Amino acid sequence: MLSKTVITSYSKFGLRNGLLLWKEDSEIFDLVGFDFATPIHPFFDPLNRRPVRNFINVTVVEIASQLSGNRLRGSIPPSLVHLQFLSYLDLSGNYLSGNLPPFQMESLKYMNLRGNKLHGPVPKSFLNLTSLQTLDLRNNCFDREIPREFGALQSLSHLDVSDNQLSGHIPPKLGNLAQLQYL
Image (cartoon, rainbow, N blue to C red; front, side, top):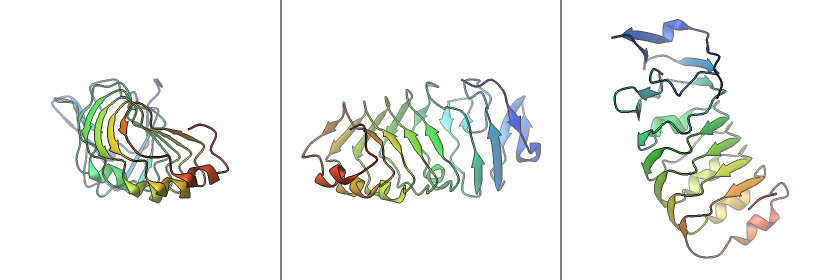
């Protein structure tokens, strides 16, 4: 875990009762190396460790840290999945639950949701993640089948959907992915 914190614009935050809070009307959020293991961070409500729900106005995010293993609960906020410039998302090893919202992060290269309690079908909206190279969904409760739309993710090199409740066949189009090294 990174220990260095660089906040390029303190005006995006507020302080209340000694806690650093994210101002939800901000448009740019630039954190590099923020230590998300601390109870004070702008992404999650420090009292119940649930995701802050409103990322609607955020257009630029640069994060070089993990959100894994922080005992986060609840569902992934729908507004989080619209962050256009997010390239790395690691929410593994938490207690996140519910269905996945439709992802629309064109710059996302790495997504790790391993070891949560996410369920329902794997969304076909992963097709929108055209830069995705690594997708780790193992050890959740996803059901139904692997979407055949995954066969269009030309940059995908690592796909792990093991330890779920998936059924059906592996889509044949996955065999056409030239970059795929791990399935």
